[in-house]
Amino acid sequence: AQTVTQSQPEMSVQEAETVTLSCTYDTSESDYYLFWYKQPPSRQMILVIRQEAYKQQNATENRFSVNFQKAAKSFSLKISDSQLGDAAMYFCAYRRSLTGNQFYFGTGTSLTVIP
Amino acid sequence: GAGVSQSPSNKVTEKGKDVELRCDPISGHTALYWYRQRLGQGLEFLIYFQGNSAPDKSGLPSDRFSAERTGESVSTLTIQRTQQEDSAVYLCASSLGIALASYEQYFGPGTRLTVT
Image 1 (cartoon, rainbow over the protein chains, first blue to last red):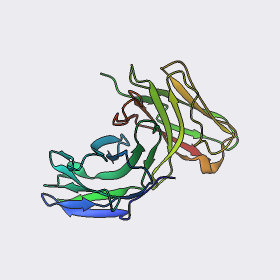
Image 2: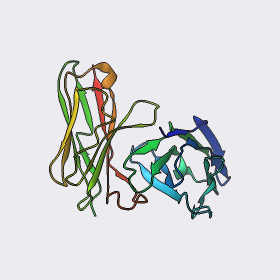
Image 3: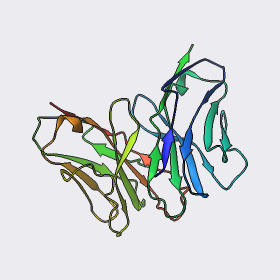
Image 4: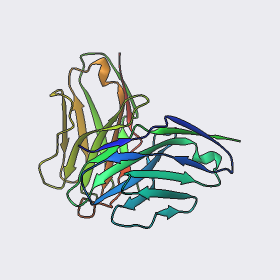
């Protein structure tokens, strides 16, 4: 079974600084997708960034980028120039490709942004 | 366009009562998921619908939980004889399907269920 581990229950960052959230996963598959979701206090889950396992290039979306280490099964999220609106729970998620209908989520990291 | 909606947003019920939670997915989304999120925890997969295929019920925790979906539209999650451990936020998500696994899920705001 696939498992996703986020070892940092809480993180904090000063506004305008950079923070990295960790995620590791366990799988025997070679082809899969990885996601980072953000859940603000409103509870609305929002996709932040996705990574296809077959791509070596790390995904980036504006201030958000990932460090995908396939051999190490690691998928960390870097937030640059942190903003107050980045404060939220962040969940790492795994999905098997093609026939994978289940998403597997980590337990989340609560990010606080300090003004 | 409209996103995924869920109702009610909050539900308080007495132990032993049945509850129904509703999810309206984004129009055109063939895939629909239900998750449970306990306080301070991640998302726990419950059930998945894809078009007219048989649903994947592998995540339902007990036979007190069931879900239905009418075609590719509304879904209801029913919890019978609620227990206090059922207290959680129940999230619904929809996506275009699984033909491309990169299809992201769009989540509703959730229903917070409190069993007293």
